Image 1 (cartoon, rainbow, N blue to C red):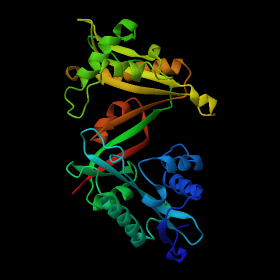
Image 2: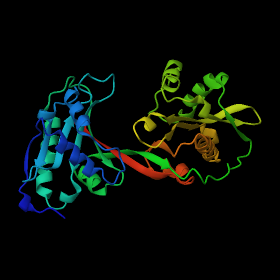
Image 3: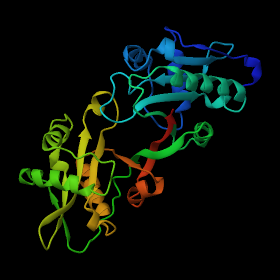
Image 4: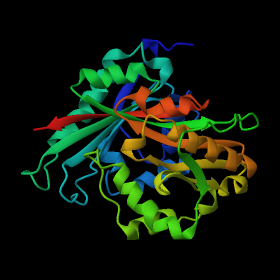
Length: 332
């Protein structure tokens, strides 16, 4: 049932002891996202986060029966501690219960503007540095995206979690001229690290990964499984042209969830893009993880253009499980 103004909601600061109400609001707002359930304990943990003081940086709209129907919170992410050389970043989170979106427009305007004012009023650690305010919205939530855009935020890009859960009916691997797929071998590791950096030479936002970071990221993770990694090789020169790195979340079984495979990285050299190498690597990854008995394979995908980001996965029958669009607004 759609709520009406007879609920007489009010806006006030968030209070300790109301973590369950906040969790219920967040879960209602994410009901269509297939996300993990937010628990009261997760909200409790935010009380110790140095980036915000919940009872000072968060406001809620409360219905007459005490339920939370909206919340806004400001995270001073780049202020504590100051980031290295990038802009100071402040994040504003705006959450609205879907049943109340159309009936309390003025109330939610008041709530969001209160959060914006709070984000802008706090003095900066270094007033000479550029500063930005960041907001996000579900990739499926046109209503929230519209609210954010009306307040001067500019779209930056989307990040998706995609899922393939039809692993019992995988097609054969496509043939790509002059390309072979091989399993990872320890002696290939150094070359893979170099290829990873070469794959992003055309991305101005990419920060070069060091050899130490490679080992820490891909070999020290408890779920790391190089035996599931695949390498694409130019059969004429024997040179690596791309790779796909995978892992299996064994912890899922311990907490009663289906065992999941993850595609942690997919990289192809710029000169080889558009020839089907990505699809070949993804297909090899799906086949190897299906052979290990996983029930679904997930992948994180990010891009300025949602269609470009997902097209290689769409072709292999991945679907979007959830997605987040990021928006930025300069401060000052």
